[in-house]
Amino acid sequence: MSRVATWVAMAVVVGSLAAGCGSGPAGRPAGAAGPAIVHGVALIEPSVSPAPYGAADMAFGLDVLNAWCKQSPQANIVLSPASLASGLGMAYLGSGRSTARAMAGVLHLPAAGATLEAGLQARARALRALDGPGVTVSEADQVWADPSLSTLRSYLDAIATGYDAGLGQVPLLTKPDRAASQINAAIASATRGHITNLLSAGSLQGAGWLLTDALYLHALWASPFEPAMTYPAQFTTAAGQRVQAHYLHGGYFESATADGWTAVSLPYQGGRLAMTALLPSSAPGPGSASCPDLPTAAVAALTSRLGSSGSGSGDAGVALPKVSLSSTANMVNLLSGLGMGVAFSPQADFTGISPQAAGIGLIVHAATLQVDEQGTVASAATAVGIGAAAAEPAPQTVVFDRPYVLLITDTATGEPLFLARVANPDLP
Image (cartoon, rainbow, N blue to C red; front, side, top):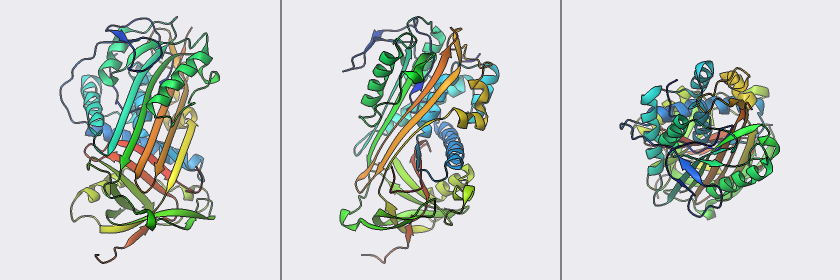
């Protein structure tokens, strides 16, 4: 099986990763109280463009958003495609045969083997480069394993190369309450306290490995909204109800229209990161009509127009609700529906992690998103559990007064850090 290094986003993966072996020094993260961490050997890959991996995560994230919205058409949704794809990608590093093929299809992997490994490292560098004045982006990757299990050295090398992740031992099989407490503490620390109880002892039953990766974002607008210009107005929810939302008002943002969607780009400080607010052309209807598909091609067309001078719709004002969103969901059924069912079945092949590794039994994803006058604070964690066999003219204003989508991307690579659907800004 070729060692495939998946993307480096920020996710928490929980699974049965056997502990016990690995090369490289042991140590603890600075300031952390917990088990010693053993690292594999990280290879230096050739320099390549990370853009195909951003495109892959975008396509995967939109698939998840569209499917999730159809399952819960009246709910607010927030997720991190980067985090979810990273968590599943770390599991993919140890997959084989039909399991690898199914996961590669759902994840829209752009390549295999060494080419993908090089892209993974490039994506990691691009994500780290987003951190700067006015923008905080941090990620933490980790593998946890029960001491009774053995993890292949080749797998430790792969996660070290792609994720800079090491291996720590926690009693997943014998004392899952203690293991959950240690892992939750690490995730809470990495997400600045925004995600504190991702896992319970019950959720870890039968899991031998835990691969953790957590994402935190705090970004200030390039042009903050004036608090005096925030005031309440009506919002029509996905259920057709009228509620009061508090709208941020500002002017002269780049906008574009394509494929039944209007997009407005709201840049953050430094110009490397931007939020794109996407409004469908019509108000929601009954049933699935309240969840119009947002195709990858439509996002690509809008992004292209927003990024090409003179090809968009020009400057626009914006009236955007302040929101504080959070979502937590078990993604097993949704991802099975997208084509990854074999990964959760007795036929699953994760022997690239360990001969003792069985199928995925848990995929929990949590994310938060706060949007206000100053900027955006967001966090995400993903848990993938693998069982052990044993003064100008007033611009036209785009009013987001019905369910809409928010997308936060790396403007250089297209990597989607966060994706949300706001069905009712009056609810969390």
